[in-house]
Each structure stands twice: as structure tokens, then as C-alpha cells.
Image 1 (cartoon, helix red, strand yellow):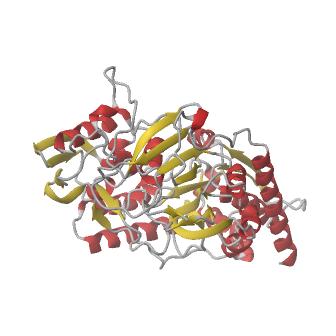
Image 2 (cartoon, rainbow, N blue to C red):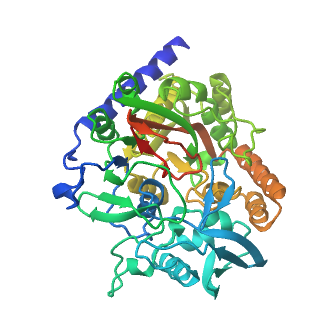
Image 3 (cartoon, rainbow, N blue to C red):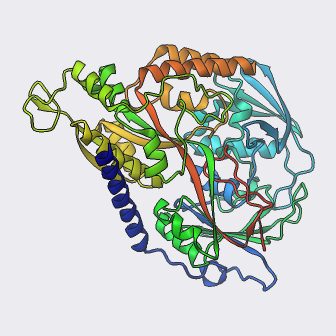
Length: 530
């Protein structure tokens, strides 16, 4: 046990060093973040400028691009949705005041009558129709996420949505970042999206496509009161976790998410930085390649879960950032089923199940084999989420302890997905927001119902169909919990750890709150500076 623990900690330290080294090699500049030559926007001496690091690449402000929409809604505060999900996953009116299902495939939404876009025009049903149709046409994931087929104007403040299937989850889907509402003036006469003309407390001032730097300032015509002293926000794309950490330490950024866990002690000891950790509706999850014969054996799938010590991963490898799963989802979610088998760490049971499946060390070389072939697994993950690399390396150590040979590939997200789609992997470690659309069916449907790994359970799919169709919330919860129980028993996909959101903030930042229902992180309008 002691030897295994030391091995895992060494592995984690090595991986942390790799992350830190990546941070030191970044080619991103950290100058010119407050206007000037980078964006052409001048700042006055009495402005309060909140500088935020965005952990992804921005090449456009077109809201049909989900990365762009995420930044515009959650980080910059320029765009808003019809519906808002609060911290406990409850839907709240936002640009829409109320909604009702008027038929199996139709919904009507009533709009606020006191909202203007940043160009001064009134937000009405025609504008909402235009915005939704733009996103429906230009965002390939829009229809699949919302099931919206068409949008019609009933009157100035009423819009009707027709869906391609019966779903009671449309209000939740209309809190999704990809459904933000923008004015038709966002597009020029040639049909090009040139500026995000939204309804938020901040309005777009400048965007540099080369650096991805975005600037916005307070919109005086905002529809509700906001208490903050921030007059401008500057969002900088810094994809490297180490560079984000360094930028906060150097005083160049005020808010940075997903900093390297290896930097937490240094950041916590800094006079100018505060570190905040939050539980969030995001998971780390392993997917088996169910198209391979080896994973058709349930004993193998479950053995590989028993071999992983989830408590050590969270407490020692991830340094306490995250949580030990009690099921598939974050247990704070009201529809999470925590009365399921989590296959808690038991290396003896793992070895026993593998032996039952025919895997033994027949040639005494320290590795399991079957029919003369060594058991070798290809593990893959992606670079964006700092915990993924650490979990993967730790998994490699756990498997080595029971005689499984592994190879590891750490890729960009798109490259990892390409391997998954091509079937060129054995286990893929992914991370996803489980309340991207805050409904009991969304996460299960996305990763257990419709997937690229070859996992199909028709009973799960039927339960998820029922979950989407019923209007009774208690029934939704029950259908989702039953689907989770079946999927957990199948063990084709499993959660080794719950994601933890970790932020490095300038000591000057005040009133920053975290919303667990966010895609990545929401910077509330009320966030201020000393």
C-alpha cells in the first residue's frame, strides 16, 4: 500500500512538473491588456477595469460559435438568454418572464417589455426570432441541444417555438449559452456577424481576432439595477494554465480559472492573490471503447474501476480540488442518484475479476495475459482541463500495480475526439459540464444515450425519452435516477472524480460568486474591485 501510494504521488508530481513547464514555455504576450495598441480602446484614469483570463481560443464574436457565446454570456456579460439557471439548478425568468407548453411540440414564451439592445432598439419577438434562426442555421449543435425546429412571432412580446419532438425541457435548453439573444444589427449587409449586440450589462467595444482580446464597457440602458464599480471588462484568451497562473501572480489578470494544481500553494501564499475552490456540475469520466471485444466482458469493465482509488485521486493527486463521486453526477444535483454501486477501490477484487475473465500472468513476467497476448491498454485524454492529465497518470500507476501494461496519449480536445470516433483507444478520460442544459435528461442523454463509443442500452434510452416527455418534475427525477442506475450497472462509462473549479483572483476582487450550473464560470455583474 505504501509503495503504491508513493508511486502515485511521484507520478502526480511528475505530471504537475510537466504542466508547470508548459506554462513557462507559453508564447502568449502579457502586455497591453488595458486598451492601447492591442485593441485601440483608450482607458480613462478613473475607470475600474476587471481583467479576466478566458481558457479557450476566440477567433470570432459570432454567437453561433459556442465558445464565443460562452465568453459573451458568462465571462464578458454582454449577452443574455431567455431563461437563467441559478446556483441550485432552478430555472428563473430572464429575458423571458414566463413560458407554457401549448401542445406536444409547441411552447410560448412571454418576453420582458423593458429590454433594449446595445444599439438602442427594443428587444421584441421579431428580434428573438431572428436571433434564434441565426443560431439554428449557423450552429450545428443548436437543433440537437434544443430540438427547436421553427420559431414564430405571436405578437410583439410572445414567441412560439415548435420542436422536432415532444420535450418538456425547452425552458432549460433556453438557458444554454448557445441560445443567447442578439440584435439583427450584429450582422452586416453582407450577412457577416461583425459585433455582438446583446442585452447585457456590458456592451462590446472592441475585439482583436488575432489575440482574441475582447473589451466591453457598461451599457447605460441596461434593464435592471446592478451594483458594481467596474466600468470595463477586458477578456484575454490564455489557453495555457501555467500562463494564466503567472498572469495573476504578476498582477496582469484579476480572475483566472483552472490554474495548475501544482501552483496552488504558491498562489495561496502570495500577498496579492486569493485562491477559491468550488464544487461544480462537471465530471471527469472514463469511456471504454465498447466496440472492442475485451470490453464486452462486464467483469473486465468493473475490474478496471475497482483498480482505481478514487479517494486518493481526489485528495492526493488532485490536491483536494474536486470530489469523490457517490454516483455518476455531482450529488448536489437534485436528480443525482447516489444509491448506486460506485465500485470502491479493491485491487484484490479487480485481480479476481480479471482472472475470472481469463487474464493471468501465465509467463510470470509481471503482466497479465490471455491466450498468449499481454493485456495492454491505450489511455487518452485532453489538455484543457488540468486534472485530466493527473488522473490519467495516476490510473497508469494503479493499473501497473495489478499487472496491466498501458500507454498514454495527452492531446488537444479535437484530436482526442478524432481518436474516439476512429476507435483508436481503449479508455478515454473526458470532462464535461453535467448541467450545460440543467435538466435531468441532458447529461445522461448526451454521454450515455448518444455516444461514439458503441455503448447502447435501450432501456436507458426509453427512460430518458420518458424523462424528456413528462411535465411532472418528480417523475423527471425518478426516470433520470433509474437511467443512472442501469448505466452504472453496465459500467461502460464511469466517473473517477467530480470536477473542482479552482480560481486565482486578485486580492482586489470582491463579490465574485460561483454558479455551479455554469458551463465554465460566470463572472457576475456585481463583481467589483477595491
